[in-house]
Each structure stands twice: as C-alpha cells, then as structure tokens.
Length: 319
Image (cartoon, rainbow, N blue to C red):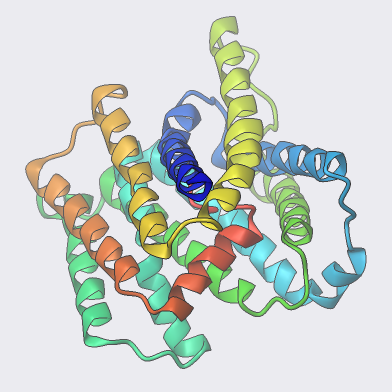
C-alpha cells in the first residue's frame, strides 16, 4: 500500500516538475540579458545552490573522480554551455514554441550519434522517426512561406543545434566512470561558467549586467526571473526530478517528461502571444510524436542512457 502511495507521489512530483520545466522559456523571455549572460548566471547560481544542498546533506565532493574523468567532463561542460546558449538564443530570435519543439529533437540526434560512437544499430522504426522529425522541423521553420532568411528559420537552427549538443552530452556521459552524480554536475557547472566568462568577455564583448537605461521594474523582473531560473529550475527542480525518475518506470518517465514541451507551447501561444501557423503546429506534432514514439520503443539499455543523462545533471538537462 505504501509503495503504491509513493509511486503516486513520485508520478505527481514528476508531472509538476515537467510542467515547471515548460516555463523556462517564459522566464527567459523576461530577462533582458544576452543568452550567454543568462547561461553564466544559471550555471554559477545553480552550481552554488547544488553545492550548498550537497553540503547540507553531509556529502563530500570527490576531486579525484573529477580528475580521473577530466577530459570527458571538459567536453560535457563545453557542450552544456553551448546547449543552453543555443536554446535561449532560439527563444529570443524566434519564439518559445519554435525553440522548445526543435530542442526536443535531442532523442533523434542521440540515435545518430550513438550509431557512430557506440556502433548502435539504427532500426527501421528509428529511421522513420528521424525522417518524420526532419519533416517536422521543416514545417516548424515555416521556410516554405517565409524563405530561408527569417527569424523562424534561425530559431529552428539554434534550437536544433542545441538539441545536437544536448545529445552529445548524453553520449559523452556514457564514457564517465566511477564518479558521483553531484561531482559531475559541479564540474560541468563550473566549467560552463568559465566558458561563458571567456566568451562574454573576449568574443561577445557584452555586459554581464542589466542595462541601467532600462526601466527599474523591468530590471527587477529580470533579476527575479533569473533567480527563479537559477535556484528553482536549475537547482531545486533538477534534484527532485532525478529522485522521481529513479523511482518510476521508464515508460512513465518518457510520457510525463513530454508535459514540458506541451506547457511551453501553451504558454507561448496564450501568454506570450506567439502564434503558430497550422503547418507549424503540424510540424510540432510530428517532432514531438516521433520523439515520443522513439522514447517508448527504446530497449532497456537505451532507456538507461536517458536516465544517466538526467543523473549526471541531477536531472535534462532538458529545459
């Protein structure tokens, strides 16, 4: 009886957290900073939050395990920084809906990457999922109506590239050995922070801070959204996400995590008033439907890959 109640609680927890992840684009929309600056604060503040939680839990940070996995952790930290920047940039140049849908292409790219890195065979069903998702991206980009030089197409490119780096994180995390979840996260967050400092200072050459010429209420809202995104979405929710997925069936996790893009699409349309054409909506259905089908048809080994990724980030890093 108790076990049944616990499962219900974990299912409800995962439902609420997935819905919360769907609000990432909404909060990002109200932060008047460059995508790189948002990533900098998210990694820095989120990392601090997780370190504090680890210490309060009485756990130690194993520097030795980080050193042993240094090369792979550097790659995953670099991919994480690019993944987040591209995701937020997709939101900014196009819409939360377009960025979200294209970002959820990750499982499709993981199939392709795994076939090269781990010689995993691409099945006929997986190949069809890749084809359908590709058609979906073309429709979502609205390239048929607006041409290739448009913000919608650019948003699709950013979102898709973000999904590729997301898939690379998953794949490279499979190469990590004998390292605790929190040790992976701390290193990846710290390295992502360093990457963003270098990028913002020497390449982007933009400010880390809010423009003082902006209205005070806009700055205050931006700061509030940044704190929520860093501490709540990136810290608190990811920890509890991992706890939930470790106690639920893989099929349940695959279905419930798709609440994330559904919520994001809802908020994009009804709150941010970002419209989608009928063809774009059809494209979104094709992408999310094909990736969900792929998730539900995975072998137990493949399901383990997805969970290990969330494990490595105390969660997806999904949005």
